[in-house]
Amino acid sequence: MEHSFEEQINIASLFLQENNLEQSIQNYEYALKSASTIKQKMDLYILLGRLYQKNNESSKAIDNLKKAIKTYDDFLEKDTLIDKASIFNNLATLYLVANIDLAIDNYKLALKYNPKSIEYYLHIASVYDQELKKNKAALEYYKKFISSLPEKLDSKKGKERYAINLKKYALRRITSIKEEEFFGVSEK
Image (cartoon, rainbow, N blue to C red; front, side, top):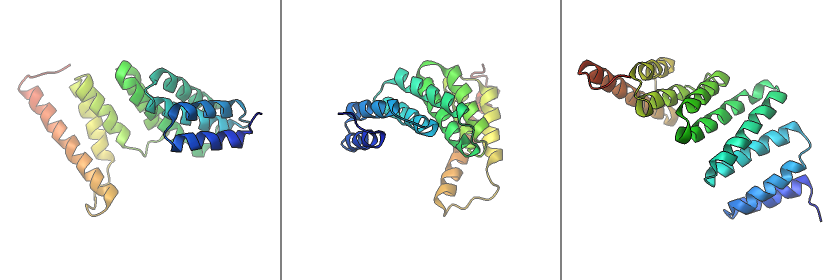
């Protein structure tokens, strides 16, 4: 007996709640076959990408997230741009292991689709800094991150306290990079 789209989603969700990723993925894949709208397909590709990522199946995660991007391009609605940015962010995270240049490209695309998410500047800076040892590019993105923060941050507010800590990190990295350059430790 074939299950409806909604039933497949419910079954997959139950398996996910039980932390049975393989069965959850399988049922979400079945649901994808019976998805009738672009939005349903888009959401399922994203979900499958994240589940495959959680299941340490990077290539399948990347495939599904790329399909989600392609589906987003067919679904041109302005309110989905933040979601599209999130997909690029997830792709960047996956590419960090295998292809640093693609990771940076995807972080930059995430920033393009959601310029208000300034943490992407920090991600890019960190990759240039920690992975590629490209000081000039790292400094540029650390500075962009800091300049994008509001001037006044309240340490009593959770998100703002977090932003203060990230700003302190970025400032420490800027200082450290400048010291490395001054003392001739490294520059690429």
